[in-house]
Image 1 (tube, chains in turn blue, brown):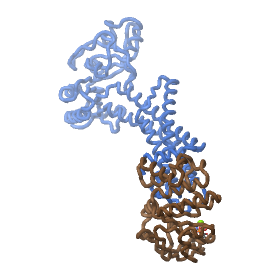
Image 2 (tube, each protein chain N blue to C red):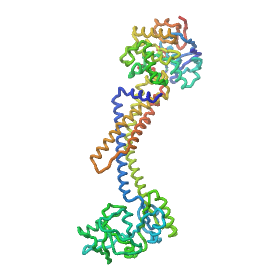
Image 3 (cartoon, each protein chain N blue to C red):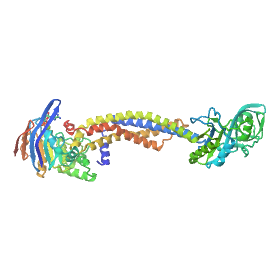
Length: 401
Length: 224
Ligand SMILES: Nc1ncnc2c1ncn2[C@@H]1O[C@H](COP(=O)(O)OP(=O)(O)OP(=O)(O)O)[C@@H](O)[C@H]1O
Ligand SMILES: [Mg+2]
């Protein structure tokens, strides 16, 4: 049977559509609308969060001393392992092909004093590349000088919170900051930036790494940050770094962290969450599907004589089957089309009510919603359609119509 | 062209068996007009359903156009119903939401006849039953006689080998019944093979053969 005839015939059967047909379409449309709306919300939420995280730089490879058995979180007790030395950092920078930038990090907390104001501050020891690697910017002044990693210099940069709390509205450039018994000249002011990797990027003082390691009397670094040329080279770079450090340390006493892993597991979690929410919405589709089955079963009973007649004049079982499947699919797809309309309208309304929340309905979600509505009709139409196709013609005809 | 040999049909309801047909032998030559009569429950409809390939006999052989129907699978029976058999029922069995033309097109849709050809042939068939001016009417806008003529047009549109009519005038008043009867006679004159089931004694001798059925057996068969 030609698909166009099939469509025409099933369309025709709704010409005198009853209240129960309309209710079924309505139920389907509500199901589809809620699935579409929640999918849009889930996906938009996911994209929003990932976009925030992507701002951290997805080409970053972080070397942490100590071996972590599970990923995530810094090592609790590195134990007796090789430390991550400045020499390691320099080596990685020079000899790994994909590495385009490197910033070592040493970290400590010290009392900082300006005039008579004193505060305990987080001190980062690094080089002049840190700003670039962490995508930080200067608002005023200049960067740390470009030095050998072992070379000290009594200069520092400060974050915006440090600026506000120690200087208020005064210009800090050129002023002296006392860290314990050491004096540093403030040469630059770092632009404000949000939380990043669980650290307040505004509340710290940046000094050359050699200074901090000397002050703290440490040999080992807290982190080495490596910028990789492109996202695609991450995997090879990660392997090269691993091999090189193992050969230098004789064992794997370090951990490599990539944003990639964080991003993709975060993406996975958010994705699953989004699908779970859509799945809950899909339960309303189940109810709509059952209505479809019910309406179609009633239709089959009502049209017994018609089915018998069609068989008497030459309809095969498969033709009857496809006729009733087409009707069920038409019913549900009509609901799907209306549901997509309702869903888009709902997204608009939510956007209007909560402007901060970005709600956009991806095209694939619309296509999926329509496909799902069609599928629901087929799925829940199978039982009634099979019943129609298996009706013995003589019995179907024997009722007077 | 139609040959029945030892056709039996039993209905089983639990332990009880109803013998609707008990060994029917029958030959229907092409171009004939047979009238099948008999009391209620004698098996007329059962016989017609078997002839129309809507039902299978419990035993016996049925040959249509040289094919042994009783040996064919269901899918072949569908083709026979589609191309070789025309059915007319007492209660018309038109699809109420469809126009006369659409009703007549129905068998051609199942047979896969292209749309353009379908409409032409449907209108031709309706013209041949005298309904040229009713092609777009729906069944509820037609009289009983007109409805039955639409049903006859539908049964003829695939040019079947035989037309099976089960009490086609049973639901009609005398005038409409007469209309339908004249149409059947005209179709017979044009060469169609017709088997008419009726209760009406006045129609007994309208064809060329009269078959009387009683308790599932042929009681008499006479040329008229
Ligand atoms: N599906 C069925 N199950 C059981 N018995 C049946 C069935 N169909 C028909 N019969 C029985 O078979 C016998 C013949 O029935 P059939 O309908 O062929 O009679 P008929 O001659 O057409 O009668 P009528 O003139 O009333 O239409 C009857 O006794 C009937 O009760
Ligand atoms: Mg009967």
